Image (tube, rainbow, N blue to C red):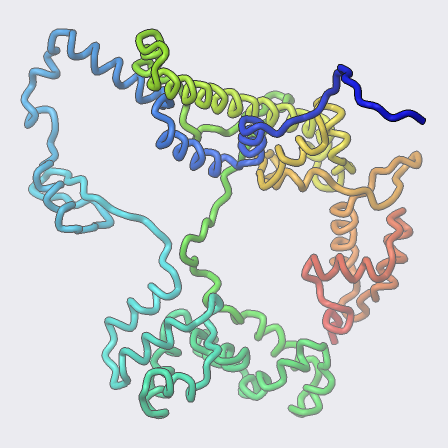
Length: 471
């Protein structure tokens, strides 16, 4: 074999990840709120970008300047507005925040206000600062500051006394004060103490109830016979006490928000049924409408061959690509949502029982894109439907069996719903075992193993057979 050097030409195709393509991919997988934040950052970095609202306001301002003043504009400010703006800004400077409009001298005052859900820490500190107690306020504040999200305290009294450099008695008094705050149950060091602190919420509880709280581990394991034997009461009485325990809150702090918590979902796509037809709307109302700043664009014709022109060209290309990428995201989202509606029309009209198995490949073939594009377009996004708000991934249900005509039409959600219905109709005195539930599902052509039944039952929050049994 002879070896040698030579030159040859050939054509090949390959994908190069350019910065523009990387930006387009990033924009595609952003949710509506994340995209809004991303656009705001780009508006600060790129001077050629501007919102269409800004450009229209500038145009209207120019037109008002050129036009003659109207009668409304010639009217004195006192006649046009009944608001004392000097007093308004004076209040702002003093950082006065009010939560309602105040009527003063028969005039409405528009005072600045804020609306935010208080955190558990803020709620407890506010109560501490208006109370009078003999214990050290600093120690009580230390305890409140070390409560977890559920309102429980993981420290011992010895730890608190050592860290705050006070006596054990002072730490105990401070903890007792914290445990009287709303909501009842905060400051507890274990589940039994948490439930015991909530006894005042029960108008009249059985005399054996405090003693019953010492057997929570047996209750969780379904060992009701052992509890009945220990308390010397009938097992039916034990179940009544267990039902009473379930009316208390084991996590009293979870109803409060945490710092920076987002307690709502903004859907990226909205589907409405109008006269039997599904209408798809891409919810991008939170994203500013972008345009190109005309003042900088005109610099291209006056600054030829200069560094200014190169800078403007670079920013102009970046602005145009960003606008194009946002529009491409909107179009891709619409196509994916439209394909999902076609596949899951029966679910949208009739409910969870009619949810069909669906994969990313099915939607990719329908839309004409790669599976990875569908995955990015549906990642961390929500869709509002007549059946409620769901994550996009919810519609990609996996197949778990065969339906009629040997078609793959049984989904995980459908099996869970059937399992819930079977358990809801069982005899409470003779609840079904997991194996019996698997046999009943098999009779419905939903063949899954006993272990899978136990897994789905746990996901539905349904207790085991021994706990469900009623006496």
